[in-house]
View 1 (spheres, rainbow, N blue to C red):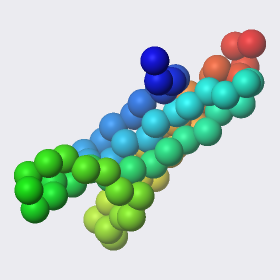
View 2: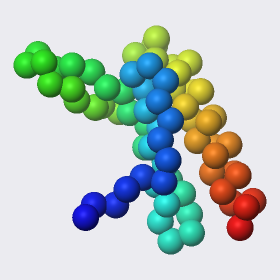
View 3: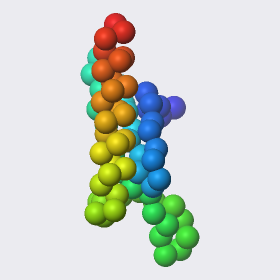
Length: 72
């Protein structure tokens, strides 16, 4: 079974996925889009209009990780 994320934050098409690995956390930021064939895909390339949601997702991930680390 594949690793599951510790947490996810989604605002609009932007997702921050938090991963836990041996006591530390990392975050993947991505944007969802529909391909020409109609399938949903993800990219780590962002448009100017994505940046506010990107920043908000990153901030929420940072706060969540901070709470996890202080709870230990």
